[in-house]
Amino acid sequence: MIKYSKIDGLRRIKRLETFRPKMSLQDTIHFCIENGFKLDIEYEGENEDVLNGYRTVAPAAFGKHITTGNKVMRAYLLQGVSKSKKSPQWRLFRLDRIKKYNIFYSSTSVKKNKLYRMDDKHMAVIYAEIEKAFENLLEI
Image (cartoon, rainbow, N blue to C red; front, side, top):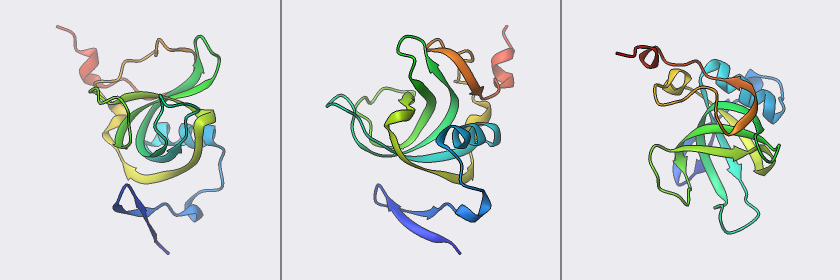
């Protein structure tokens, strides 16, 4: 059975929980990276610098932050709130600030994204990462 929800005013298909067992956030991010799925998250900050709300992201990597040691996810912001309007929309999300999450079972082109730079310099340890796009390997 398909359930519908409203996120940012748009009608979306809510993910079917019967397709997969309940997974931790880290396992869910790893699953999304490996299979090229998007992720719907509810993100909450501790101060005014971070806007609270829903976001749809395409996870590219997750690991430990180089200076703070927090577990973080590098993701491309597809939809949702953001205080910074910079392009491209690559963002670093702390896992402890993600309050709710759900897999958006729709394939994304971020699995092999030519804008993504491997070996994220903001992560001391990388647990999972998307593949580098073939276009990045062609240097003339």
